[in-house]
Length: 177
Image (tube, rainbow, N blue to C red; front, side, top):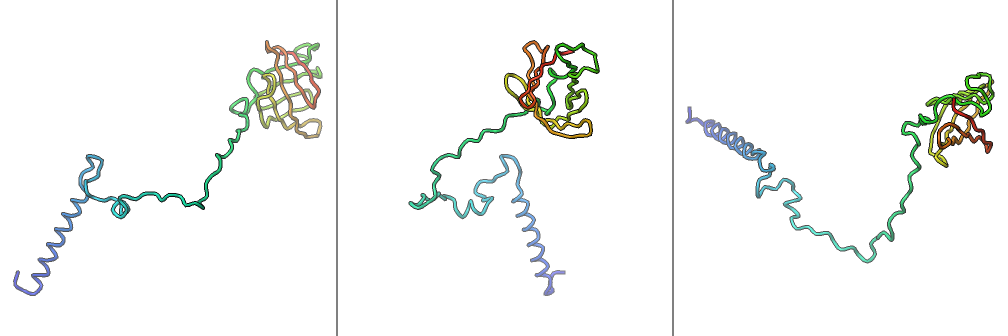
């Protein structure tokens, strides 16, 4: 088997394959100890620039004169879900009206996402914290064949029994039913 001209080439190829396999196995190594072997560069930059230092800025380099200004974030919604707070939800009517009288002009039902007035309904678009512990609600209203958008300030009394709603500068107080 081993005296022809191809025998030495075949033998050389076998040795090359064996050595390549051994080199690959040695390169893989074990993952113990962080997977790095001492003296082995894993990044060519590690080998090329081992003691790299940043250059000093030149006299004409661009430098920041001051820190960027802090920008205040907009106030968070009063309710994380953008809904009317549960403390304001429920049935309300005029201070002098009888609870349960559906014909009362100041009859109002506040739901998490809607105002239901006597002749209109307002779908809540946003809820933010207002003044004096109240909330500011923007809602899209429909009623009697018309549509409009209003921002209402809802201000509950300390005991929660009364609710003042300010609409276009006009305040109306209702009692809880």
